[in-house]
Image (cartoon, rainbow, N blue to C red; front, side):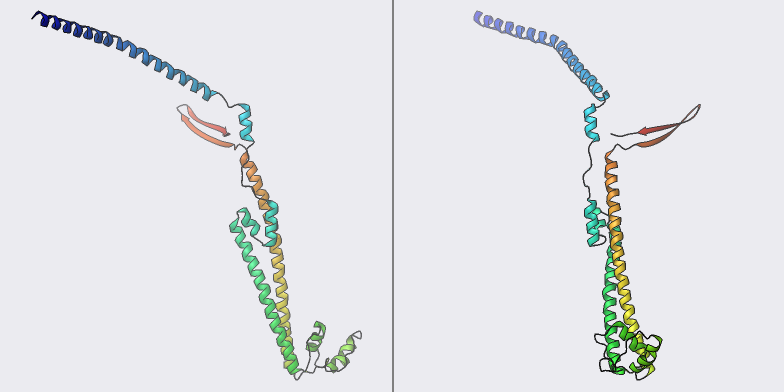
Length: 269
């Protein structure tokens, strides 16, 4: 019985000691938490002051100069644009990105060369027609003859008329002997008029073909000059775009004592 009471007493003493230890820790915890929170607040305050100091300071001079010296990429060669337009009008504009303008040069180029081919083909057809017509209705051989001789066939009724009347008005003209290679004599004035009509249509077609060639050449020259101008303008735009852009801002404000207008010039970096 006595031993049981002795062991029970030791247990009570151990429980009391544990309770006293917990009470001491519970009493000391608020102070520790307070000091810990104060340390965190002071740390955040120091960081905030440091952030304010950093944001208020202007950038270093060297960093500003490096940013200012940057240049945008994507430059186009003016020489390459000019060469492309010389080879194919509109190609230089297409290379520079002006695809809408390039389409007009492409269209003019296609139309002009189509006209050259079409008019030359038509002129050749009419030439063959009047050569064949003169052989049939005037017994004239015009193959390999000059344009001057073909005009004589259309102007004079026969070789005899040319030698008698034609050389009277122009004695410098050579006399043509009536040989199979030089002979011609129209059966009627209507046949001679039809020959002149075919010959004139052939020459008109060849003249229009030469005019279309001129349009193609002019289109090429204009395209080259336009590509050079657009290339230089694009280069200037890139150079100006790399510099700080200035912007003027107007602000209006009204107060009880009147209105106020404020002008502000912003230069972004």
